[in-house]
Structures are given as C-alpha cells and as structure tokens.
Image (cartoon, rainbow, N blue to C red; front, top):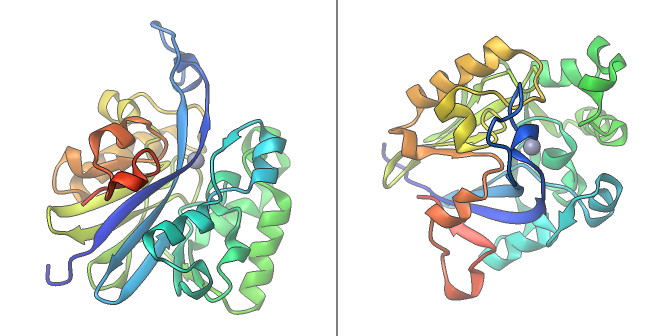
Length: 259
Ligand SMILES: [Zn+2]
C-alpha cells in the first residue's frame, strides 16, 4: 500500500422507519430503526473520487424523505468542487445513489455492466424491482453513455492505485462496493451491500433484494476485502455518524472521517 487516502462520509438525508422494514421476515424486537443517507469522498495523491451522488430536495419530497442538504454542495464543505471532480463511482442506480449526477459535469461515472443491464432490462417490468429506480435517471445515464462519460466495469477492477471496485450483486444485479487503501488499512465502502451493520453482522438481508444468496455471500466478500469487520462502512446506518469523528467542530453531525 503506497498511496493512502482520506475517506469521508457526508450525511445528506434521513428517513424514519421501523426495524421490521429493514430485514427479510421482519424483526421480533420491532422498534425505530431509521436510515441515514450518505455520499462519500475519497481523497489523496492529488486525486478526488466521489462515491455516489445522492438525491435532490425535489426527489426527497416525491419519496417522503427528510432532505438535509444537497450532497454536491456539501462536498464544498470539504473544499471539493463538484464541477471539477473527474471520477464518480455509482455503486448502483437506485434513486438515493445516482440522483444529482448532472451536478458532476466533468466526471467519468464508474458503473458495473450488469447494473445497466438490470436497470434497462426485463426485470424493470416488475414494480418490486423497479420502484427504487427513477426512469429519468436511468435514461440520463444512457445519455451519459452516448457522451462517452460512463466507464463500465465487469467485476473487480482497480480505478487508481489503492482504489478498487468490487461487484457484489445481491441488493441489485450490479451493486458494487469500493475498497480504499487508508492509513488504518483496507477500508470498504459497502454501500447497499449492507445497509446496516446488523444486516451483515447477523446475516439478515435487507428486504429490497435482487438475489438473497448473492447478498448473503456479499457479506462474506466484504469481510474478505476489508482489513477487519470494523473497516466495513455500511450504506445507511446512523451508527456511522456515532462511531467516527467529525473532521472539524463545524462539520459535526454532517461529515465524519472514516480513515
Ligand atoms: Zn441506498
């Protein structure tokens, strides 16, 4: 590991829900178990990679989520200018991960082949597979392909020294995680390969799922990729904001530093 990166989680939205909605088969100890929504910034060696682009205030209204701040604007709190970012990883094409991608006009978007196949193929005829996708965003991504602004990946690939993408599947057909070399070892941004710590720690999948076997296998995959279980960052767990420190007093409750 020669190049080491800083990694930040930026919280941009919130949604109250119950534990029974977060596990297949519900939860016997049902109680409040809210979701936080994040985008992530990887920075080092003169490089900035944004992981996911979140959703807009308008989409939050449509979907009934609490929008706290524009994810692209929030990057400016870390002196990252969204209009000049060159690389954006889209972990998958669900509305809460790919909205706002037009706010990154200079970026190449990194996406798995099978995620585009899934989002534009036969399974979108089913409401249960389609409902977390927004057709205009998927169409927008197709337009981006025609502008030669999408870099497709097939499986596991390094996009820079110490930053690699890993096809996990499970939650969607082309869900990918991001592994980053940091000063504390290999860190894995799981995104929705595990929404909460509890999903992977207890082997209890989140109910929005394309393939349950792939999702469960994905938990093991995350553990193999990361330096330790404590190096895996789930995609929506409010505990992330508690377990990691803010980079400054001013950013408390908004940004935490993961490395
Ligand atoms: Zn999500």
